[in-house]
Structures are given as structure tokens and as C-alpha cells.
Image (cartoon, rainbow, N blue to C red; front, side):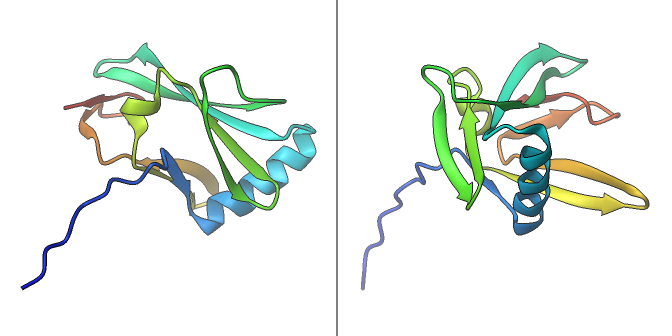
Length: 118
């Protein structure tokens, strides 16, 4: 019999390969070097994701390198809300959409603009 110990990941978010490809192009055209993820109180269920391009992380941000030219900063206020989230970029019809696969979400509004955690 063996015993396994669960060690939680220290990575706040991960990006899929398609998201890395998308953000690599966007960062190059925006002449920025960072993607910054934060949240704000909004919508009918609690929080909304905010994704911006930045020159550098802000003090207290958690950071990670997601690709050769994709650096991600997560605001310290959003870190617990998004911990374990996978950021994806998908094509739906003719539209490209950023999807947040957040395991902490317990409720979302019907339009998908806001979420709440448990």
C-alpha cells in the first residue's frame, strides 16, 4: 500500500496552446509584454474578468511565463478567485472568444458576463 500526498499547484492560471498563440499575436501588435488578469465586482452574480495588456506587472501580482513571449500577471485581489483557471481561446462561428475554465465557479449569469465562487 502506498500513500500519495496532494500538493496543490502554485500556478494561478494556465493557458492553452491556442490562447498562447492568440496572445502572442495580440501582444506583438499592442507593443506590450504582459497580459494582466484581474476581476471586478459586476453583473448579476458577483464578479467579471478583466483582461488587459500591460508593460509590467503591478506590485503584488502573481506572475508566470506562459510562452516564449507571453507573460501573465494576475492581480493579488483576483488570485484566489481564479486559482486553477485555464484560459482558452476558441473559435465559435466567425468569432474568436476567450474562455475561462474556472473550477471555483459555482454560479454564472445567463449571458456569461459574471460569475460567483463557492
